[in-house]
Image: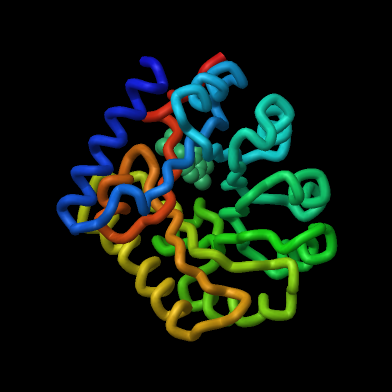
Length: 226
Ligand SMILES: *Cc1c(COP(=O)(O)O)cnc(C)c1O
């Protein structure tokens, strides 16, 4: 399928999800996750009108960035090793996977200007998932005030890969409640307005629960490709 056709379908689904909860589709940013696809396919997505791309590994990110660069905004969505920070930090527009103090420290040291970060939360508590436990998040956000190059714009989570709608809703709702608590605290370094949640499997539900950034790979640009 062409990206433009997939995009039209996803936009219709977004509209439907928004109507159910009286939200404006304009408030939802679609990030095309291109980690499995080629530079050509990524360029096709750019032509189709997508301006936000997500990559989860430094190598893949740098290859796509070299081809497309500032024509798009770049979201780094994977675990970032501290030793890789210096190679990628000033190229990305958003980091969705801030999950530890050592990473914050390295970013603070290496970045030329403040980086817009999402704190990654492991809401479901699955061993396989990265991110902070729910009860670690507020203390972590508070300690980030000492890092002038970290700007907390939101929270990110990956829901478990299940079809049980109520369980998915609970995960998204928990992230939203946590976000609301942080917003209420009114930290200068952490406005934390955004919720990066929802993937191909669950974005309609994530939108109903308040997602502002959805990260879509398979349904938009396709799964594994050679
Ligand atoms: C791969 C990935 C996605 C996209 O997953 P799809 O199911 O292909 O839409 C979203 N977020 C993260 C963090 C990912 O690693």
